[in-house]
Length: 251
Image 1: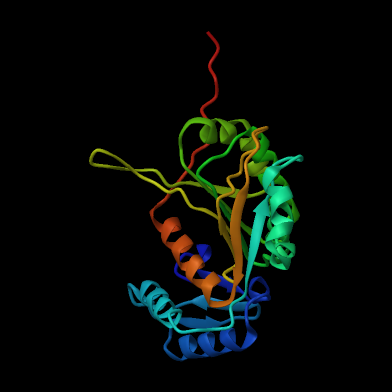
Image 2 (image 1 turned 180 degrees about the vertical axis):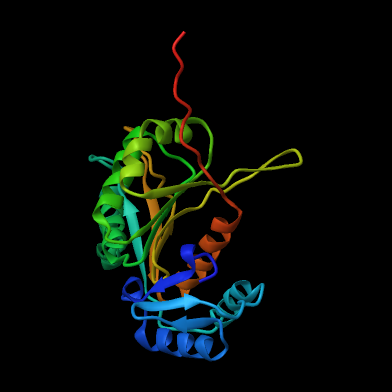
């Protein structure tokens, strides 16, 4: 609501959110004068939403997250190309290894699950990884598509070369590289987030190399995913939009 452009909220864009929660919250906010009902959803006002309310509710959600819940977690892995030493060793560790899910399959599942928003947060990106990233954004039906990177080296160069494709797919690109005394505040986390209900956190960057490297992560839902979502929302607030590359001038 706080960040909604135009001050309107379309009920159809909330189709994948829990209906009971939407009804409870909107009824309360209408009663307080923070929302008013329209034919297709709600419009913000006439009363002003109190400053800091969104942050307060994020904090309340984080406090609620410290209690046990029924979140599920699945191990996600990218195996080195065959023949692989770890690939040969894993079957000897027991049946649990059979529960591993591939990174590619997991990323596609996240893209398919996203109904309202789909976020990819990767500090490292190259041209091959951008192809994977664009395929995921093409695959998702989420209307809000967000790519968060570090504005440096290969990542920025890949974004510049793929800018028109990102624009056609309505992908917003944010840069989380903030100057601080003695250097930069930035990130090393790799996250994919479907709405606030399903999240991947792991070591897999959006890069593709010939090197023999194993990547490992966790796919989680429920309360744990909502905590990840609150962190991503925090990043959104401090990151800066990446501008279109400047055209090359002829000499």
